[in-house]
Image (cartoon, rainbow, N blue to C red; front, side, top):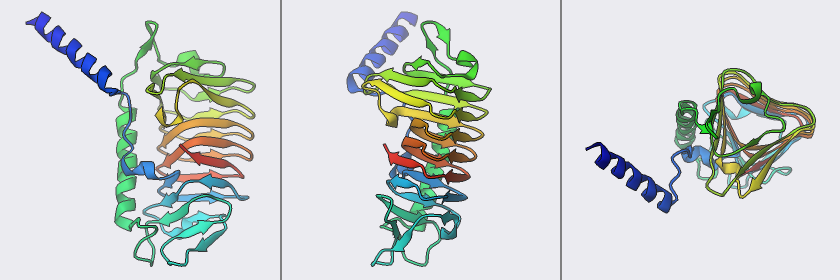
Length: 255
């Protein structure tokens, strides 16, 4: 019976591989519609450039500040001349914002929270037989990560003068989960090699993410508390925060 079970497991693994299924992938649901989604506010001082839609819910539209917003002629959503996208709010007088209703925004927030819980609960994997637990003492600067789940109970940092590299094929999935914070030092970089994709990198952070001036980050941020991007910093990915997002002349490109 054991041999039969092993055969069935192997067969299932081959089917999954053949179908391109990757069990590490984190389903964002409708939260994937947004470059930035937050529950308590999105602010920028001075102006930032965001490519993609941003939204707050359940808080009102007054919690989106610092953007050069202008109501669309339809009266259903706002746009910013410095950004390539729309701004949505969970509480609006208009019947919907770009066909995104308050109910749909509520669903997106629930999907964001579900994705966080899912990703935070993933078990640590191993690379070359070495468990990915508190890798590098939390300093990922200069490291090259391959597909897997990396778990930390300490702050994750990308130290000054270093680059963190994600390497893999187009199906490679990377999960970096920490019960603390992620802090990226000034003028540091996150790079992709091979065919690795930003949309397959998930930063699962219980506390805060801080990206310092002039630094570049890749991936989807699933954050329990705050996210801050300092002047000249950038992200290729998405910011999905359960509290507030603070931008200081940053660039966010949805991936």
